[in-house]
Amino acid sequence: MAEELSAATSYTEDDFYCPVCQEVLKTPVWTVACQHVFCRKCFLIAVRESGIHCPLCHGSIVPMTCPICVSLPWGDPSQVTRNFVSHVNQRHPFDYGEFVNLQLDEETPYQTAVEESFQVNI
Image 1 (cartoon, one colour):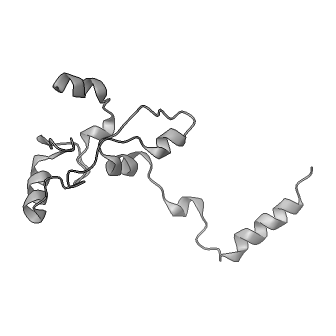
Image 2 (cartoon, rainbow, N blue to C red; image 1 turned 180 degrees about the vertical axis):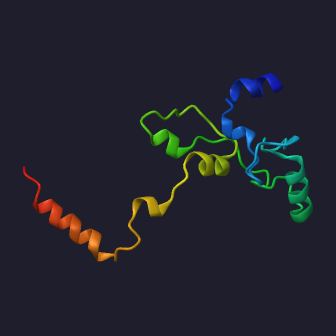
Image 3 (cartoon, one colour; image 1 turned 135 degrees about the vertical axis):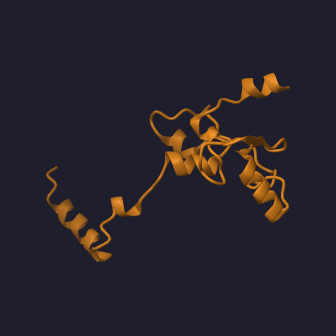
């Protein structure tokens, strides 16, 4: 069974980070039901505080493919992650302020886009 699991699951860098503390795993603990891995300390604290068997999914989630990775031109639809939240936080961080000028009012970008569209030569 362990050989079947390792053959069917490809591991990524994200699989070595704890979804609770977001650090590299320290004394990893593996949940049998959902196959999530946590730092032993994080797992014990989460289980003690909430009484659940998996701090991430409550034992009802399976490995998944990231829809963001798949949509990229170099995306690999066969790559799965066992910790989607950690994967998104580490691989796809998004800072709204980098893409939008927060100093402008809502109407200014629309007005600029309309003005620029009139200057396009066809």
